[in-house]
Amino acid sequence: MPGDDLASEAERLLSDFRRYDACVDIVSAAEVWFTKAEGIRETVAHFERYPTIRHRDGEQATPDFTVLFHDATAYVGELSNLALEPASLDSLCHQIGRYDSLDRVPGPGGALAEVSAIDILLFVPQGEANAAVARMSEAMEDSEHPYAPSRFPTVFGWSFERERNRYIFSLARGEKNQRPRGNGREHSLENWMDSTLSPDTLTGKPEYFSPIKVEKRFMNDPTPSLYMATLLWSAVFPTMSGGQGDISTTTTELANRLREDYGRGRANEVERALNLLKVGGLAQREGPDGWVVPHQPINRHEEDLAATLIDRFKSRPSGPVTFAARERARATRREREANRAKQTDLDD
Image (tube, rainbow, N blue to C red; front, side, top):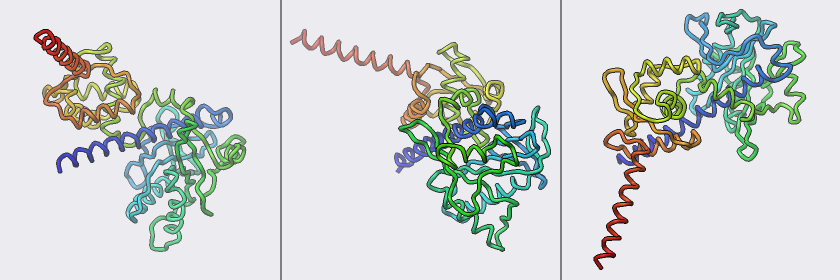
């Protein structure tokens, strides 16, 4: 039924938002480890949040982050979900197999720097982590499977402890799964994982990584439309409207603003977000690239704002209506009803 399809699409949009938001958290937590943690930060020459590397096969490699150390070794980070289908395993093995054979990663100033050794850090949801190690181990041992890395990736299972407000990253079980190499560095992730109160466990606390997340907002995967729409409404439009009011803009202008403010902005992702707002009556197309947005502030946490935008998406209003205008309309209706009730009392 159409209503069921709409509800399913709304749930998918929210699910994509939450998954991407968690991934931005995790990349931001990793950036804290390698650029803020005393001892380790001094060993790092460059942390790259949006790496794009020309692989020797001629195609681009786009891991979720890279870390170049002063000793010319590197970490390559990838966040993944591993589905039960064999095709999902094959896709993941192909992806990280290409990363294993990289011979350079981004360095200071954007130039690629040659490296002598690479460790892959693979982050998967906690419930999939042990299975990921077992399935990749089986693929390596299968003579007919193309996955044959020079070194098994370090697999972390991640989860979020809501009661303690922190991410937990635990080294998954499996004989082949080893800590990432420190290559003799006194301060390294390898040694750090040995010296923590919970060996082979790392943490990421919002109090530490939130400033980086607010500053950079994105990670290297395509941005879901609801996440982009929420960012535009909560952070970009207020700077253009002075807090509230109609905004006349273009897809290109918004993409450029995102690149200037956060280091990343793609016109096609902005376009999809604006179309989502349009369905919710919160944006109106004006010409091939132009848009008018009747912006009003919504003082809510971003996940709550995302849910509010989804409510607008599901209601499918016939034209642009701001939240403030909707509240004014409700107040007017309440006033009219109160006046009618009062008039009825007088007539009686």
